[in-house]
Every structure is written in C-alpha cells, then in structure tokens.
Length: 189
Image (tube, rainbow, N blue to C red):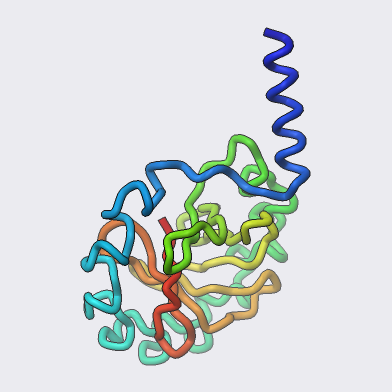
C-alpha cells in the first residue's frame, strides 16, 4: 500500500511540475458525448441557432446592450469593484488559493475547447459572479465576470476588459465570442 501511495505521490508531483492541468473528465468531453459538441448539436451551435448568437440577439451582445457592457455598466467592471477582481482580491486569486488552480489534484471545474472539441484551457468557478481561465499549461490567462443572465465578460489578469465574452448555449455550457460578436469556435463545458 505504501508503494502505491508513494507512486501516486510521485506521479502527482511530476504531473504538477510539468504544468499541466487535470485530465479531461468524460462528462465534460464533447468527443465522448456528441450532445456537448456544437459541431454535432445544432441547438448549442450559435451559427445554427440565432437565439444564442449575439449577432442576431442583441440582448446578449455587449456592443448593443449597455447593461452587459462593462464600459457602460460599472457594477460589472472589476476595475471598479475589488470583489470581482482577483488581481486585487487575493481571496479570488488562484496564485493564493490553489483550490482554483487546475494543477491542484483535487481541482474540479470546466474545460475550454476549440472548434475541433480539443481542450485548450481550464475554467474554475470561483463564485457565482466569477470564473477563472487558464491555458493548457495551467497558466492563469484571465477571468470571466457575470454580466447578465448567461453572459460573462472576459478580462485579462489585470482586470482590463478584452471585449470577448461567453454566452450560455441554452443547454450545457457557454460559447466564446470576440468583441465583434463572432463566435470564436471555442466553447466551455
């Protein structure tokens, strides 16, 4: 038993020093469950469902709805509210709280996929208002702040809005859009 525990400890130590996050959980995998893939499920594909596409549904588009635009709505801007900004609020910062970090062996979170349903990052839900984003090397790249029902704006690690945002796909997760409202092909499950 001690040998098994030692082997597991060595594996976890090596795994975490390589900089990789968690292996993909099958219940989040769009390659295992085609219902999770926008390529296979038209309901969650914004190119096929105009209700979840900010080019057609301006209620979910920060360029057309000031209520979900942090440049116009200071209550969703982390530069104005430290409780939404992990750069200044150490209680939300993954460098100070490793439970948010995908290198942590007990991490539970979401996965960021590209258009081909390959993992390109990790998303940790820190609070109901805030999710943290990491790349595949488990480097913290920014965070999402809830702007409205099913809408999260993406900010860099310093709290500057990138113009990008997530919109709820109406079923399982979120689709990632650029500042012009174009779907990047990326999705979170």
